[in-house]
Length: 309
Image 1 (spheres, rainbow, N blue to C red):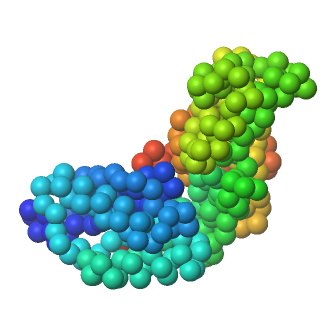
Image 2: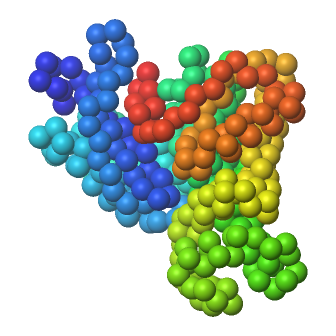
């Protein structure tokens, strides 16, 4: 499987809880990886959809990426997968078995969705990656190759600083205001418009039908209201930044104490909201962390190809 010049093509897949993105690339003459085309499909978190569904979405994304190049092969020599939910061994094995059953892939590399961020987002494959979208967690890899993580406990009782956590906090602040038990806040009116229901007592039947990714989108409403000057929403945004900074400082103290590190940031919340990024980095520094440099990754799938290095 090569390009027109005979250079081997590299295939990477970022399987997430909201969408799956495939990338096809090649290694240029200078050794750098060049991304050629992309394909997008549905969610493929291997803990929230079946192994069959996850592989189906990965395969569809791959086909769409190849279609953009004008050729879709029946068999692919090697694929690097970065899969949300990969930390569960039973789900990981079920996914691997499904890919092998398809007979379409010669060799596979599979990791969780944070590992490529360090491989492709830092100069020496060493540092901390912080992901904050619907969920949140931090992953570290030090110079000895030791790995660690912080957070990522899921939306039911974890994911502090995530879009979902901020959305729930915003909804709670709004209904407290509606009851008169909390401070007045523009969140009540803004979330009424967003949900499409002016009576806050009627929100729950609608929200119960939504999945966590849909609910987490309310974080964008909280941020807009905060940036328009609402004090209640502003405190929620600051809290999210502080919670995410706590991920960084906790794992830095455990694995890098006293050592300047590179930090990689990604995920829908961190990509979209610069004030939260700034709060996170300021909180890390205020907690004693030493940052050598940081990089915002707006297209995480590009880093998956670095798993081939």
